[in-house]
Amino acid sequence: MFARLEERYLRFDIEDNGVGMNAETLMSLKQKEKIKGEHFTGIGVNNVDDRIKMIYGMDYGINIVSKEESGTTVTIKIPIRK
Image (cartoon, rainbow, N blue to C red; front, side, top):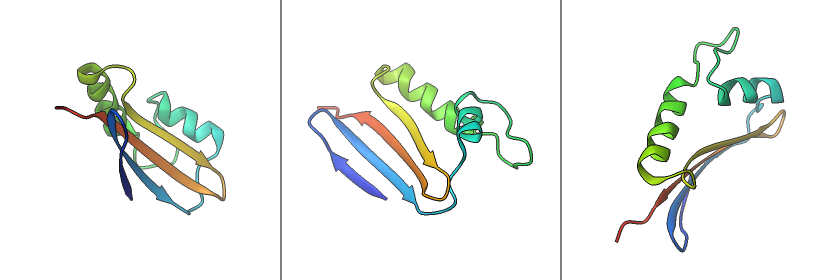
């Protein structure tokens, strides 16, 4: 896990080097659909992303990037409040 202070926002990157997700699984997660055979639906992640966007705008929120056999990175961006 890494935290970085950028010019206008705070960025958290959570990375793993696990098996990753194929494109279909990642798309299902992003579209809030239940993933067959999995015990999680991603609803909690999407709920948090929706709330961040609602409060701070579309430039902020959660982004998930994953590639099979290469792992997954979850990035959370929130603005700096002064």
